[in-house]
Image: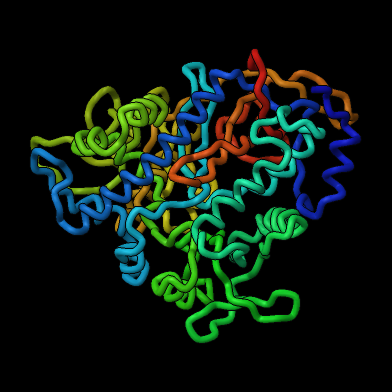
Length: 469
């Protein structure tokens, strides 16, 4: 595939309101991944789907007080206690409705860091941004050749639509309302772009603010070209911590419970918790995961998910220690003791688990090895102080490796840049399978420790190549 010239990319971006007030570095080429890497990413998608299904079983058995295992006793009410902590009873009760059993998000997006040891899966996002952006970049970099990018030129939006429409198979052309809250408003333009492209193909997909929803009897309606029309499917683009700011939340909850409207991702707050990955590593739950995950998915997840711990401050007996990293080479009894860890021992990340505005994006992230001792101690103290309402997770930091890729400079000249890579693969759930429909690569300068979208990062789609960069 020929390289994209600087002016072509720049003109395409400037022509789209999708990219208003957004800037990033440009690259002439999609990110190359080997066939083996792509196959591994496909297996990761299957493992993510299996994990969400097993997590649903874990949570349900936990709050019901049921045994978690087939042939020996394991009752773990503390799992539901963790996952329900800080949440309104209305949200908890909604997630526990029997008709929502086994429901999971239709779009999954893990964060994968490329390290010297392979991929590290640091988070799973069930309300992911970047769908419209990746669709746009796929089409731009494909240049009419579907095989040039992973997912194809239009595969992202087509798979997104199919995954949503599959939740209401009895309706041939469902009205899909993408509901974006004020908190998530940064992503509204990319959903406007995605919906507009789908409407060009005759699909009834529109983007709305929560206040645009009108309850009429048992139905929820929206204005479609001047007429109130009943919604079939809501694609919920707001996290559930934001529910108090969604004026029509009660109507959405009731419509989902009555079955008049399908809401996806389902409004299950526990599916949005980062501590879910810490449960994967919890030694008490290992037999549960072995029983409820396919062998291959268990192996994949154990290999790529960094060890994580839930920072729950509890009183211990005098002879007990926390299952936690060591400080000064010794086990700890209180999380605050981690404040005395050496620089090397502080190769750890603290982040809010969920159901809080700090858990959105990278707002709460503290990388111990990259901050002063006092800032590290402050991060620990804040995590402990918030534990009654918002748990925090401690995670081993797996440093992304340095790797080169061509990037345009300000003069429009492509030059090799050394940087670090995060991949965000998008999986759409259909027919009980997770299909890989696009990968958004974020390529940051090598001096950046935490990778996210930023002005000096390049954002680009991925392609299959015989040799990776």
